[in-house]
Image (cartoon, rainbow, N blue to C red; front, side):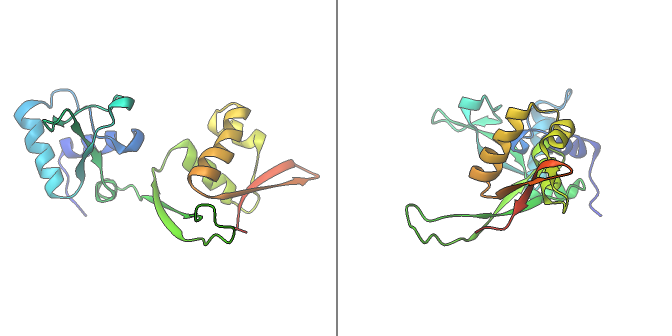
Length: 180
């Protein structure tokens, strides 16, 4: 079992709950030399890594690189494991561009646990699948947002095949199916 300080636990836990596992901003009271020392230790352990900051998404800067760009800090898979969060790996299909007989190959993507998208994937992987009403109730999304997640995030971005079937007792039921 990895022994973390209270500061390390706070930084990693907060980062795991943010989009793209961004570890910034630092907790209140952690600034200057103390923040630099804590971050340096976590980078040495492999729990954090510096990544290019996306200024268009207003990601907070850790440091400027001098060329007009900057870096931010992201929690790594090792960082998630250190705080007891198992990274979710999703197998996806990647099709060759424009080739009729596209080959499928597995590509690993890490999804954060505890997100609505992870909940949706879990619901769709169940043998009984999920109806639109169940998805809306579980996620709090509007029906059009849930449909967008099924086709956009799961279908186009992750390459998961979402199939639906009309069942007499429940109506339309959605499941993650096998690639064709």
